[in-house]
Image 1 (cartoon, helix red, strand yellow):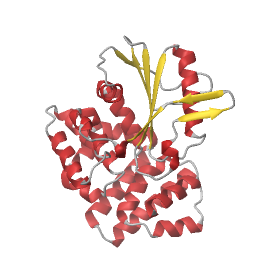
Image 2 (cartoon, rainbow, N blue to C red):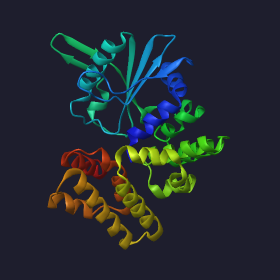
Image 3 (cartoon, rainbow, N blue to C red):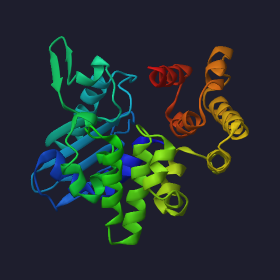
Image 4 (tube, helix red, strand yellow):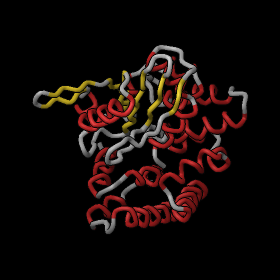
Length: 296
């Protein structure tokens, strides 16, 4: 499951929540713009037009700071294309989702000879969760915010989700919350507070899956996850491992023996998490970076 797709859905469904939180302003006259920019196509994460203010809010969500090309250059490229196409004020914000000590999450500008481009950076794990708890569209991000008691914060978010009156909205927010919480919480803990059934029943769950999965892969991942949940024993872990290796092989080609040995050592929970993020991988280097991250 891609975290990008989850957050793109949230911004498109609840743009007012994100504008209020990130720009400290109220806006109702907004328009969701195409995220595929002109020239040779590149796709931004979220582009929202505030019509009265004649301003664009451009968001990029990053699980890890590694990027090709480097993120500062991408942000400059996005800005130039947006400005050429819309010729208005552009507010760019990069939101890093997963805690890291990498210096790259502190970089907020691109610098080259005769060119400097600046943008804003939010490290979500440093943010006060209280503003995020006030709006349905921001509740999933609240699970990643600053806290001395992560379990209590997750429980607080779950309570807020349960108080959403409209059932379809509650279900969609629950699904998004579970997906983003998976960046920092073990699946077993998430299931203590949020209904796993929402994942299978929700239309947004299916919509997000289809962004990066063919139907056969979708069935395989769901079957592997369910098997791990129900059995919780080595047989389930081995089945999940075989499934993940098959998916990685389809995605990246052959996996070298050293990486396969490291995969053999992963727990069931780690394999489940890998099954959700591997669709973002484009090379063995991405897999290696993910493995290094969980070992640190």
